[in-house]
Image (cartoon, rainbow, N blue to C red):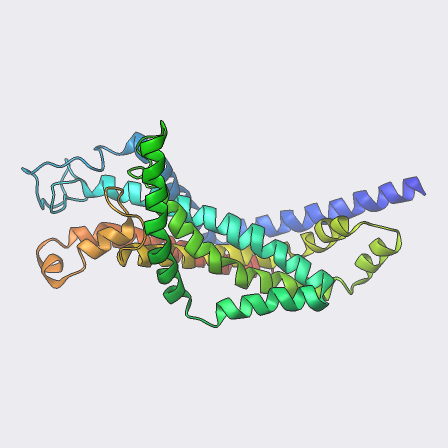
Length: 321
């Protein structure tokens, strides 16, 4: 009995490994997907390494270099205060990386997947409670409620941060942008779990009726084991596709919040704030590079995530070859 069980486990592991190997090889053959991966690595790497590779400080002002076009000294030109646009774009990418990764990891993956598993597996009242709560959130315009949350929470968090600076040894808490990170992340997480929870719930409702799950429960497998060893692995493919598609949406939403003045606030640079400063007819005519650099980066990130998600959908979909 023990030998047969070991054999079954090895066979299942070989099948899973074979599926992953085939999916990876198919992904490697998709040129658009590989280009998207390289672009994301380069752009995100530049944002993460901004303190190392940025040629200037993002707050440094040079009033002799105000509104200068791109040159060897300033690769993306300078803004209305003589600050290097390339440096500020790098730090804006870093802010986008931090917020989108944190929101997707907490809202989309941790909360969304967990609630989807619980709702689909247990059903009945738990399912109704979770899904009705999600429907209440989804019944309102997402961006509107995100704006309300950000506008409501930010003054309170700023007050708490200043109190900590005045009464403890913590210094520079407000200037570091932590308050803005927390406010924007909470606003995005509040709605980021709904779509993922619905997706996972739908997968679990189907998978829990399959024979291998019935067999696992028949031999006495615990509920966590059924959830995380038999249900979740079989729902990974749509989760991966949804995450990659959702990253592009999160990037766009974060930029919109910053553009509306409710995201990352000065002195920390953000792509949305930079687009706001250059988003008028006069600036477009006189200093188009102020819009070109942050706009091109934002467009590239959203496009790369969407193309990668589309490629992963083709690779991981069992109905495609």
